[in-house]
Length: 336
Image (cartoon, rainbow, N blue to C red):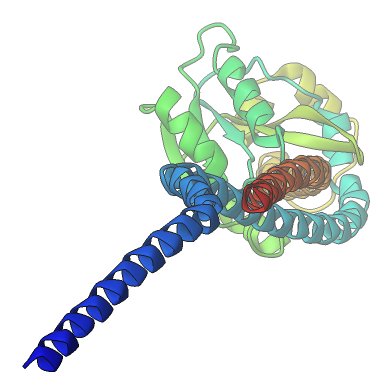
């Protein structure tokens, strides 16, 4: 029994020693764990600070994405404007040749009847504008001259009417003179300008029985300049009512019909040819102005792209620098 008791005491002692060793082991592991995990806790603190500010990273990456998308759109716009400049330059050369050939059609009538914007009776102002935009101040000059010309009338003259060619003049003058517009002609310059188109417009205008038509357009001078011009076309009644014009006209020898019928045919042809000439001149000025506008747009797009590239590189470099600082800070903290 005693052995059994001694054996029991010995067994109890072993159990106590095992318990002391276990507590010592746990204390040692705890000390080592504190020394080893302490830098990790610091690093976790840095990570917690980083996670506490997710909005800044999101804003940074979002701003980079926005700048990159804007750079792409600006580059695409620059490509489009360069292509439009090349197309406008090619069209301007063709339109310039047509203008040089057409000027001889209207010069004889201009020398005979001259220019007389102070007309009597019921007159019509015909502004020639384009149907497309992106061509600088071509259309605004025609609209400005038309607004001024509406106030320039002779004595005992009625309020001038308006017949508009082109969508850009229609959109502006309709708000300024809503009750003076008799007719509008759109989409006439989107296709190739022909004498048949001008004749159809002139035929419709002749049905209004205007005493005169004052055609406003931009006269092409060079690739960088154009001049607003007013060409006056008198009707047969207005010519016969002016003795000075009749006397000047009688200086020429005529064959065929009498003077009234000849003046009627000449007035109709003069209106159609002047409209055709004005449409060609304005179209050539439009293409020249579009070349300049697209060149300026391409230059602005290039400058904007360079500025956006610098901004994007600065933002990206700032992000990289911030990430490097965070990595180095974590490494230093791990080293203790």
